[in-house]
Length: 536
Image 1 (spheres, rainbow, N blue to C red):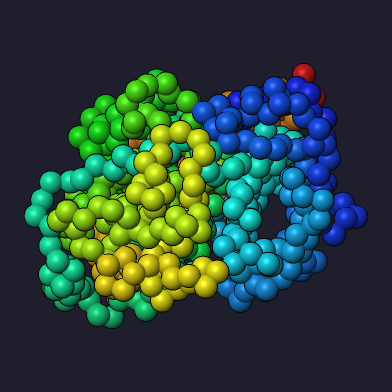
Image 2 (image 1 turned 45 degrees about the vertical axis):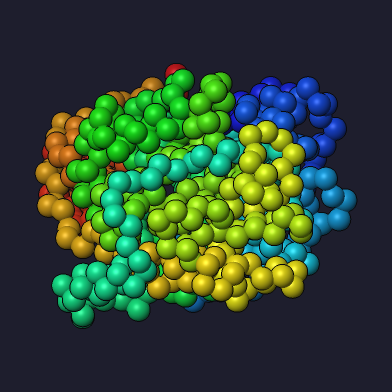
């Protein structure tokens, strides 16, 4: 069983399962919400003070598809699910809420993400990432945050967080050295760079490619990344940023837990390309990535250093056109329980806090309305929202960037000419970041030593291989029932150099190749996997 280490969830007292054939028309059904206070605290480590409720839930995945039988590709391409509505129960409420789907995406291969809003709350947002029948989810509703997590098998839990009690600190970025430029100077440099790109290859949309790295004890990295991408893109759209998105340039595991390390220490190692990050520049090139984001497990590191207590930390560039280390770090639980992932990504795109004035383009700051209890995405719990190092902040973040043309409950979310980060994203920083990398890496070398380990139960076999190139981003494993690989099929596409298969007919012939942003290598050596008639 896979442990939910991010929340230290103790599942031994749970006994429930997902039902995709549920007769209920609700996406989530609360099973048991009678857990004691002591039981609540084991679920969230350093976020335990912010947990206000927790319940066991059944998940009915068929509700998301609204009975459609079309392929996932068709649904994504022509938006068959957009506008579909469904009901779902959330913890702490007796009345099911009406969810409306805005988007269906496959940010990570074979992880299908549905996101949208909840009727009756203009700041609401949800994103559900479905992978092999399990769901990781995030809901923002009525100034509360909800997270759906699983144990890797069948069990699902919904947690309710009070975002005003999540332990933030305002010192969550590192200013990079350099001479700050005005926005007009930055735009001039962008235009000069764009002249070097073939006009025929330019797209009507702007996409910033993010390479995600994750610690070995990270909770559901593919689901967490999918939700973070959906959340950031939803914030861009809601804030009035047009035809600009972030996407995944790849997702790579790190063979470490960063145990006992503050997030600032991890970021410093990334910036210096030291230790486990010694090959970070090459990894970035292999993925043709614009930004790099590392996700670690929330270990609740205890330290007076504010960079240990924050949910994330990022490098903030002095000049958006010359960001050599566009890196950020955040904890998995803070990405899912709050919007820390989007906030730190905003910093890498040169977004400042509300009151950071010195040497900065004024428009790229956040905005807060302390009297009404809210702030924009780049709000930092400062000024009238209070320098915040503990619980009970007076403000929560909206899932929007500052834009004086937008309003929340009738009040503007920005100040003309001074606090308009959405405008800066739209006209400057997203464009600049999207052309950080416009040359492709060399195609990787062929993997070697593909090996099969016969299991002792029917068709179960393990496979592993050796990586021969730092430029490798992912691997594709193919099988066929014919040794000449006629009618072959892909059985694995991922970043690990080890996987397991279930051979259905004896024998299977297998081979693997390495891929990156430029293409794929040739095929490796060929091996054979068999099926046995017993299970020991």
